[in-house]
Image (cartoon, rainbow, N blue to C red; front, side, top):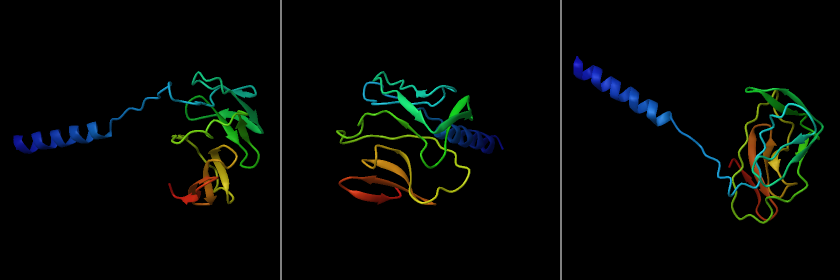
Amino acid sequence: MKKVLLTLCVMCLSLITVHISTAEIDFSTAVGIWLFDEGKGGVAEDISGEGNDGEVVKSKWVDGKFGKALEFDGKAGCVKTGAKLLEALEEFTILSWIQTTSPPPGRTGLVGQNNAPEFGFITTNELSLWTPSAGLTNNP
């Protein structure tokens, strides 16, 4: 009985440690980090230290899961930096958390730079990455 209990405890601890993880932002390589949690105003602050603050366009501040968030209209709402931040990069990582209230209507960009590159929905249930030289890659 003690052996079974010990085995179960070890298994539970193993499962817990497998699910514990951390993520760190490398500020020395980040070109932009926007939290969209200001809660008011027409500027989304870039906290990367690169000064790429963005203009909030046709979007509104709402209550988010943790604090404030931006709600985009799915048509023209966006945050514009006016800079081509991804153009000269050979490698990059894009990370975003989104919540939708309905399936997106066809091609809907989530994160990008005017199609070069851009990540978003190509249909209502397919995420895609499109670039100027590689065309379209479904389901990255």
